[in-house]
Length: 242
Image 1 (cartoon, rainbow, N blue to C red):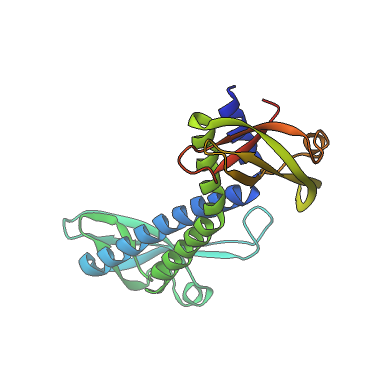
Image 2 (cartoon, rainbow, N blue to C red):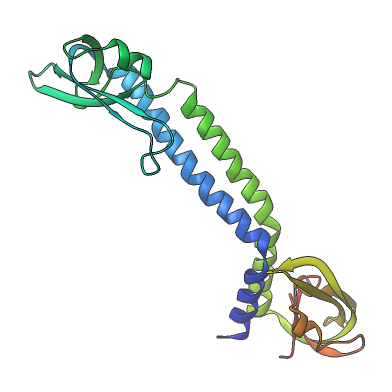
């Protein structure tokens, strides 16, 4: 593994905020996609569905258990004839009140999509406002994830750029200290350093998180490798032992 790849991977492994933010964005994106699809399907059903008279042909219940969940599930089976003459049978979950008042042979009005008759409903799957609410909430998760991850992602881009095409110089350690960040219950460390760019100007920077054994190798006044962006010397990376 090259030095550039090694340093970038080491940074990403210890960047908890990046991983938390990415997880939020992935989960939020999946939820938003699902919510948008549900919202689209709900609008399509409302716009295109046709009414039909159906007959309840059976009732069933699944008692609460450890395997089936903590609440009893009530279902009815109904049959109706679509506009093309096809006989359609559907099973639908219902409330306990609806289950109690319906008997086999009861007539109910259902709605179905003529292009896909098996997509039929007696009761709406959820209130109209649920899909947009889910989309909005999960979209907010994406935003929060992006805000949490962005500083780390921006730093990762700097590390990748500087290690790939940066200028190598020697830096001097100014200070080494323990941070308030812990990873797997191990406190992480950092150090500050100083170097001179090609113009002779002094530049300062701080290392990314260091494991205790890495930090133990350095004291104020020690010299180690640094790489910096030739066009923006303030963007630098502590390499340490090159």
